[in-house]
Image (tube, rainbow, N blue to C red; front, side, top):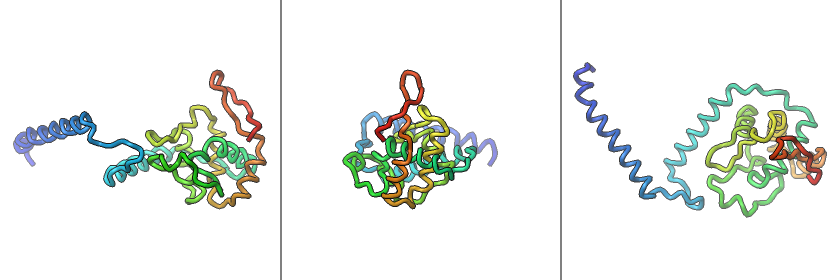
Length: 191
């Protein structure tokens, strides 16, 4: 295509871009898209958001170096943190549906019921969270080691029975809570 042809179509392309921007602005200003959590996304919207999320995580998780995740204490500490921080949304083996999850959109996956993601992917998700899903960025308040402990547990979670899971949570010294004022860890012996 020669420069003369490009110059000829440039105003048309510019007009289409401007019309698209104005249309998107009107769509947003008029509140035409229902953002209510009890109304599902349009199929195309859901597919687009899922694609963007998966690609974003995959690209960023490639630089994560996975340590040995086989330590029993590491898994037990991960189980304690998972019990305290994650079961409200993701449940645990043998745990019944709760009142919060049905109203969430997107509904968090039941991690004990699906195959475990790659450890690097799990680490990245736990550390950084996922915007507009309710998935917290635990790296703001937890060390990489604490996050790897949860990943060690998550790698085994789909194979655990309810009894095995309970044994793991009781084998831990307790959940490590973080003081919001100092950032220091403190032990919660109730878990």
